[in-house]
Image 1 (cartoon, rainbow, N blue to C red):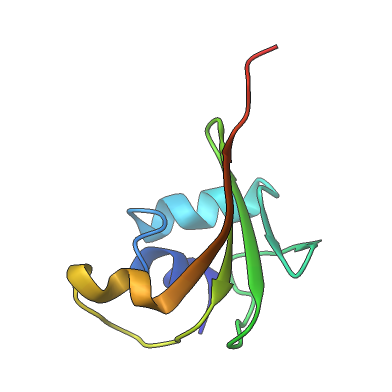
Image 2: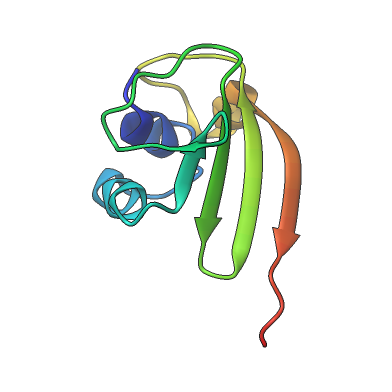
Length: 87
């Protein structure tokens, strides 16, 4: 599954176009390396997302093309979540 689609389906980012923009701005990493929107994910990959002032790191558990909003959080496991302070 493409990275931008996973971010949208899992509800980590609300819209696929926004997910693509975040990826193109090099604010998303997969397994520690910057990743483009078309990067193919596998189960077990670790995604790091810097969005706004937040940083979230998740592990991919499930790849499915569609899922209900209530079950979307079963697609990943949060490893780390933090707010970045203003300087």
